[in-house]
Length: 488
Image (cartoon, rainbow, N blue to C red):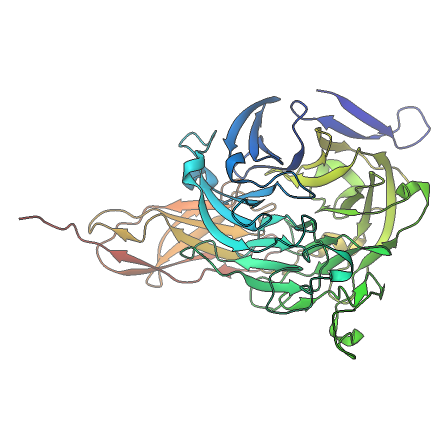
């Protein structure tokens, strides 16, 4: 594996920020993630419709859905994937791609991996949602993430063209120019819920694996690039739900074209300002153009002073940068700084189950980010280290099957989010309100139970306050009994 290093100072022996190449050169990679239960098993997404499994530097084909994918006009293709928190048990993963039926249509679909979890059969593909996007091959969005509530979140662009010429972003009922939420447990087809709106091309967004906060990198038009922020909305509070980030009335912190709205339709008070924006300019630091590639809040302790800071880049300039996101809604980001390291057209970042971060170059290379940032880049604000105190906990519970034979056992999976630092904590299963047993959380913050079923039962799961996290309780789950039918 090749390693690139950046000296953080002129003195001999200074610490260095490093990029270590993972696997071979891929074919137009777009995203990277890992098995939630095994950080050593990476999945690299390729634009034409393939996903590669990388273990110990060796890449093998995981799945090929290229026959379903519209590629590679404009920005179309297979854009990202997300794995179920209990992937090792249920094999469920989700894909986001542009389809062939109505060219450019955005598809969110589910796949099921083989029992060894090293491949998936394209025949298992089940469509969850389809979003029309035929007007242009540009501005597809493309990020798929599982939120702290266990639901799927997907970003969509405004449909392409200048000034939101197709008039999508500011229409509350239109799914384009939005962050959408999809109930991945509902019977397909599923109608996505509008989570937030007023976005131009939110190509990459992420959830902070410690706090659950959402950060969106929204690609601008001709003036500004921006980072939008929604503090942890899970559970209970509205957080980012319904937030309008302003496009096309606003572009970053300045006025946008707003040509699709009636007079007075761009009232500034109705919009949530970005926490950070930067201009398009001829400054060589930005390469003469600009297109933000949103990243992740660093939760890898091995990255030293970068811990707790948001890492991002610019597709044009390739420059890796970091900043401090605000601690709450209404604040602004601070301490933006260059990490003095460039990549060749970075198209995305990724995070594995051990919270290590990766950068993906359009040309084919995927790198793991390591080492230390330059000395001039500020450390996270002191309050960042205590932001987790009292933060909410989301507890989910699922049954592998909702119908089991009387007198048999049901397989229930409980997961807890945010996950960081919670491995080994105990979670309790309650049967009709009474304790039924406890299990310890795995690395993926999941626990499995096998309760004996004799009658219809309501199960809930509970985790106590610990490590700065508030206590959490799941929503109810009813396991329906299906007695064996006897044939005459």
